[in-house]
Length: 270
Image (cartoon, rainbow, N blue to C red; front, top):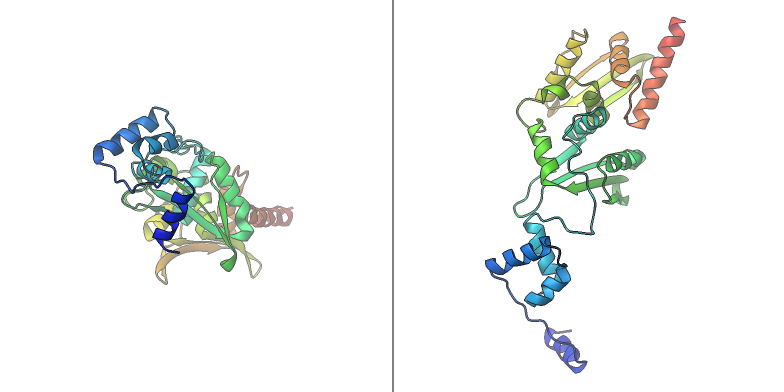
């Protein structure tokens, strides 16, 4: 159906035709001020003779939080508590921070569907009401939020460049989060094994953390397009005990493996 036909139908039914109005910079600024002052986007749209979506688009591009949409605890990473350190580590390993001009920064993470409940834990920690999306084509699920404050905080803590924050670098909770994101914990050939893959700068910081706890002798090695660090046997058990012993926040699947390995160690000693 052509546009002219649609217009004809609307006119015959007495429906006013909206004019495709382009707001000036001053009008856009006024619309933002009115919304921040408490006026609804619908009333503002009517006043400027544009669609509600046009006003919401202006607000979104200018980083104004939309009322009644989603809640989000944007100060979640301000205090580097045990839980905050864990989730920061997890996002350092498995999350992405994406910037696009005109939009709020995007923070997202995708996991296998078997770990969907872990995204629920992350969402709860962030005080978020954003949806977790299931992708049936590849049996995965994703969770994302938009927040300039959270994105800037992750970058300042060393997500992509520069030194990793000193408090995080010394935190077993942070490193457990990293290992839950990009590492493996298991038993191979009857021996405990711990492996972590990622960027060299992150793995070298992990190696320094282990050395500060008396676990030396590990090396960061090239592995395909990234790097890897790992060990087996008693050193691996020590790492598992350090990171997963009495852990407040953890990926359930890896926690189960860690508990079994540690329990086996106790039974053998007994």
